[in-house]
Amino acid sequence: MPELPEVEVTKMGISPALLHATVTDVFIGEKSLRVPLSQDLVLLKGHKVTDIARRGKYIVISFDDTSSIIVHLGMTGHFKVQDANAPLILHDHFRMYLDNGQSITLNDARRFGLVIYIRAGDNPYENKFLKVLGVEPFSDNFNATYLLNKFKNKSIAIKVAIMDSHIVVGVGNIYASESLFLSGIDPTTKSCDVKKEQLEKLVDIIKDLLKKSIAMGGTTIRDFSGADGKPGYFVQNLFVYGHEGEPCKVCNTPIVAIEQGQRRTYFCPHCQK
DNA sequence: AGTGGCACCTGTGTGC
DNA sequence: TGCACACAGGTGCCAC
Image (cartoon, rainbow, N blue to C red):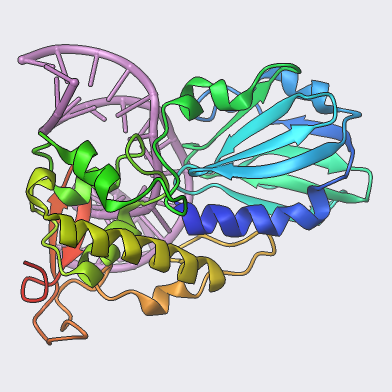
């Protein structure tokens, strides 16, 4: 799935068609996503989009009646911007038809994503999925002191810790491996054992890495594409993710893959201590 | 409170 | 060609 850069690219991709457009109709698929699609989504009809925001890997779309929807792309979710008369295809679960002749469709094969309707007057950021989220990586609140405090008494591996959305949002499996490589930190290090200087470097690198990836349209491993259907090109900048057994681009040592928290971790045993 | 494991799904690639 | 199996950008919930 989309990690933060891919979600940001998606947000930017749908904004031109969606912002200030009025919903003329909606399609609500029958299959359940991570949570069932609410029939209340029909209430969006007749309302104009006033804002499109991102919080972590969630996209929050606000309407002129103060209602909103929260969207998460899960592992395989992506939005398509198309003509309103484009046919629905397999795994299209939700579509908004717009008064500008276009439509926005959520397609998600694995159905790990979600769309939640938030009634007028309710604050979407108070939703249970959003209110527990940690700091945004681009905010000043994401710094070494913050991590030092969060990691106190934490024995979980640093790789697992930086992927924990209750600590910092947006860092998924690809960028976790990549940022630890660029920081020279062994991903199996207990988070409480990582030194402040290392955390300072890690923070800087995460911010930089995510920004660069956004600028390149995100990372496409298999099936991510922006709302325009184009893949992301940051994949060519990956040093370790998906490169098991290949020589490290820095020192030629073969890249190693291990499992941490039921997820794959890639690292260079020579560059990362 | 912190941690680890499971669950939710479908599609794709690999090896027999 | 067919089939079985492993694996995949996430994350909330549930037992210890």
